[in-house]
Length: 237
Ligand code: APR
Image 1 (spheres, protein in one colour):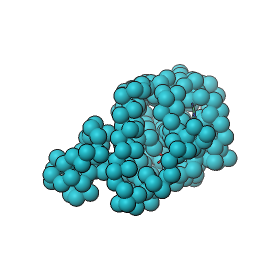
Image 2: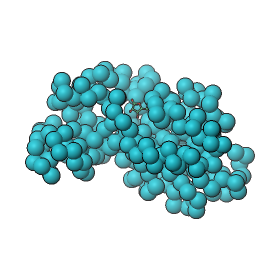
Image 3: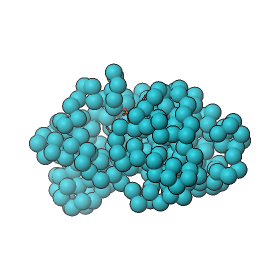
């Protein structure tokens, strides 16, 4: 990446993590003010935690869902939505985030690989539905009427969503960009390796050095709210 659009780049895959939403006021997971600092992962983000204490898990995600109404997309989300609207080649935005800030900014070619706070999954019939209320009052599933809803979030040990589509997009991409993720959680942390093995250029935009940094062809450090609009302006020329 040189500051000018590269005509050889047609197919782009972008991976985002909690860092892209940090400037909107959504806490990241790891680090001094991270979400996991105040909660034990094993109490809230494991299927066993939900089986053991569903109310605790419901309340944790209810708070996070309610907090979405107090945050707005930032310059990074808006720039990615502009890239989506104006990029004529293939583009796939894969987010590990369970917030709705990419879609509220206007991104359309978007997949949530770790689920969404604003969806609920019925542990009885398996139906997933849009959901914006609390889950802690044991509401009924709209399809089977069982009071067996959980947040539609991919917990540790569960299979992320859309992996076939994501792997196929990485196979075909010319540029893979990772934004605001620590590279600590697989399979997302392995996407850069996959992209490199397919001959794609790789770029990391992150506040600071991440576990994945050594695997990227190019690395830029700084806040996503500054780096992402700059990157999008370069891509669109
Ligand atoms: N701009 C860019 N990067 C930032 C910013 C910012 N303003 N603020 C923080 N970061 C970076 C941090 O330096 C860190 O490398 O974002 C990264 C956030 O890392 P994590 O908190 O580990 O979040 P993420 O990588 O998305 O976590 C992956 O782990 O707990 C699971 O399922 C959860 O999807 C999540 C997954």
